[in-house]
Length: 331
Image (cartoon, rainbow, N blue to C red; front, side, top):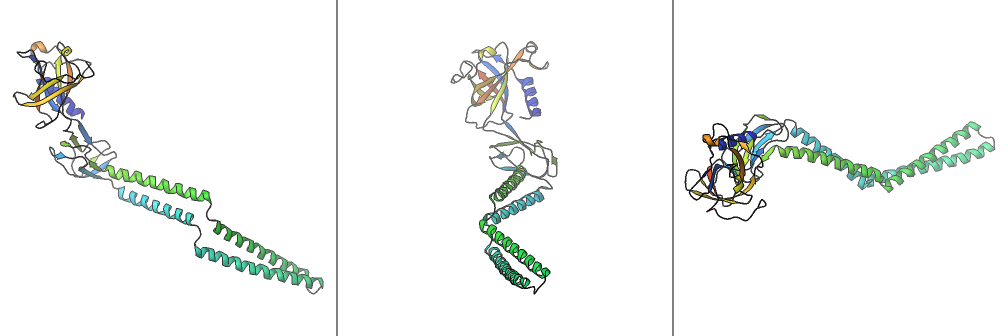
């Protein structure tokens, strides 16, 4: 319940309630029907696009009550989805390994390097023979040996490249790619959750008590746009003088009627009794009662709840003639 509504209800109750003894010595107190109030608000600052409900409307759990927006939300979602797609594609490439075309190209490069290594090795042996016969110079032989070594190194490099393609991607690279996918998906989930928070839905079946925002208005985090009352859990709060609070215990039953009439709403049971007393306002009740200490008493109404509306003034009758209830924990 919002602070404003709580203070208003408390002041109204204190200003109008009264407790007296009727002919059968029953204790009667007056108060209003209340319901749990749920403020529906964004978790981040956002602008109101539309409010889909009016005050007094009945809503069901899951009904959309308001739509909000953030200027950067569409772009951020698109960027995160693109990041996830790129990370997943990279992981697939690493897990699949080399494509057949890449393997064929590496095999062709190895074949060419092998042929070149064989040719330069043969040239080197031929030139060695000629150098022994003093037909060529030392420089020519050295050039042939250098060419043979370079060709052999190229052949070895091509063979290693083919072996790496055949072995596939290293496990640590695959693990790193998986971690990147998980990180990107987590970031996307966070943004999608923020986007979902911009659609305010009622978590319970109830009645719209307050519409606090209009389209175009900017709401900060936690500022409610709509307040829903859970009409399926009505309760009544009354105040009882200290002189008679000892007559009541948790679990006691009471009869509830529309204040000022004999129209019976149903029964209720005490679920809480304030442990601290408070003074009533100086303008409340009679002269003799103004100095009385009062204890707040909360009662849950028993179903069915037909005809029960938040704010309805009721009379609560305790004592003789009241329907019995199972003993509560306070007995």
